[in-house]
Image (cartoon, rainbow, N blue to C red):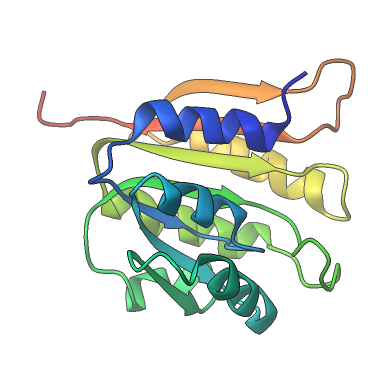
Length: 180
């Protein structure tokens, strides 16, 4: 079975062009940012933790088409003022970091709403929800409900592991082209 990160990377690989600008709302260790940069994408990354920014910068320093901001993703509109071709969010905590510093439903919903406003028509939103960690199921359910009811988005696809109700869940939505 394909890992959720591999599934997301395959989707990115076949969906976005080299000219794409992608927003990583939760940089973490910079693995997704690096994957995108290696394919020529421009990456804007956010994370609230200094350690995440440091790890991501170290991992991505050879690729100039990135800018990382240490900021709560709910405040993204203070640093991003351009249209986006894609947005990704991995909810939870920083791997190999402090497990008590996690994303929260309230800030994630604000970040998603602001991200959707910056997305171009037909841009993609990729959200990976880690449901097993403390508070993860509550956050996942809230985000899934919000996205499925958002009239600016249409559901594209999902991916998870079978036989595990709390396995990581990837949700992919596309922004509706309101001009067509």
